[in-house]
Structure formats: structure tokens, C-alpha cells
Length: 202
Figure 1: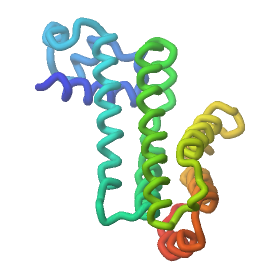
Figure 2: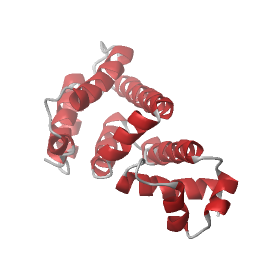
Figure 3: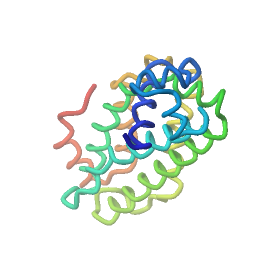
């Protein structure tokens, strides 16, 4: 069993039960190995958590690989992104994030930084592509809009205006998605979107 495979399996365990409650003994039992063997891979729980988060980041990034499809225009990418995000909503585990932030703040801060950079860069590249294709308004400032998009996501999470159930609702995410699209499209983009959004979850 490889170190990365171990970390991935334990990350799923953390997401199911929280990080704090899972000891190294629990991790070893879950893997079907001795604790001594587990310590051959990881010197302590902190190192295991670090690698688990690293694997989680890699998996999230790989989930977006369909967006690299050269046949997709910018609106196709957004629609594909929406479908991926809906699936990720159901995989969101508040306890995992809470424990990570409270007990492993350095790892949490790195996780947030990487996630932020990925979101901003992805949104920015999509905006630039859409402008070039004529689907998005030419007067958009891609740098500002990409950061506003991140701010809106984080604001929804931390404002207290939405419950956990509402934040994890596909309907809420879809409304935010449509709000974003209609704020950036040209008439050409609006027509394309309205002809291809029939599968949106509302």
C-alpha cells in the first residue's frame, strides 16, 4: 500500500467522522495494518493529516479535468463546472473543515490558500476565454470579477445568512450560478446559455 493511498483512505475516514475523533489506532484498524506499520509511513498524526489534505486537494483538482476539453467553449465550461459543483456539494463535510481549522490551523490555512488560488485562476481563465469568444462582455475586468466570485462564495459561508442545509442545497448554488452568468454574458452568450441550460438543477 502506497503512502498516498493510505492518506486518501484516511481522509475519507476523517470526512465521515471528523479528524479529532480518529486516532492513529483507529486509522490502523481501518486500514487493516498495525499501528507500527502506519508509523513507518507517518511520524505522527499531524503528518498523516497533512498528507490526507494534500490528497484531498489533488482529488478536487482532478475533478475539474473535464473542463480542459478543447471542444468546450466558455459557457460549456461553466455548465460543466456547475454539474461538478453540485456533486461536490453532497461531498462537503463541515466537521472535517471545522476540525482542520481548530486543531491544525497551519494545514487549514494552506488548504484555504490553495483552494482560493485555484478558484480565482479558474474563474479568470474562463472569463478571458469567454470574452475572446464573444460570449462574455468585453468590458469585464477578469481579475476583479474572479476575486468577487471568490468573495461571494466565502461570504455566503461565513455571513450566517444561510444555514448549512441551504448552503448545501443545489437550488441555492444554481441561483448563484445563474446570477453570475447573467452578469457577464453578451446577447450572444445569453442566447447560447438559454439554449443549453435545460439540465440545471433548480
